[in-house]
Amino acid sequence: MAKNTGQGFRRGAVSDRTQFRTSTGWVKRDSQNGQILDRKADDQPFKGVRREK
Image 1 (cartoon, rainbow, N blue to C red):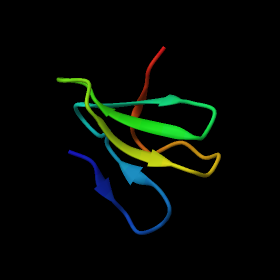
Image 2 (spheres, rainbow, N blue to C red; image 1 turned 90 degrees about the vertical axis):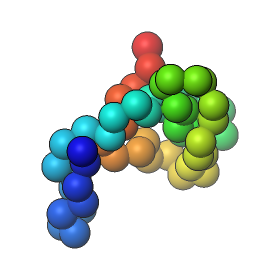
Image 3 (cartoon, one colour; image 1 turned 135 degrees about the vertical axis):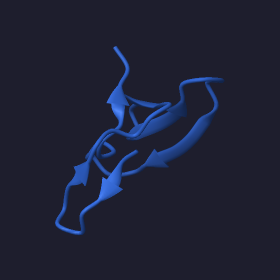
Image 4 (tube, rainbow, N blue to C red; image 1 turned 180 degrees about the horizontal axis):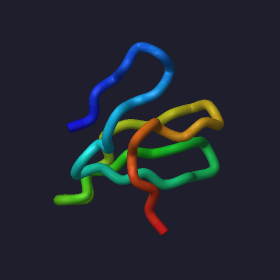
């Protein structure tokens, strides 16, 4: 399980989540059912979330 350290980084990976880039920003998806969970408007990816290829 991923834990925030409070120092700008995360220990471990976020399980059962993937992320991919769109023209509007990064999108987080549940890898089990494909449901869109969250969207980021800035240019930075989610921390500790696996990227889709």
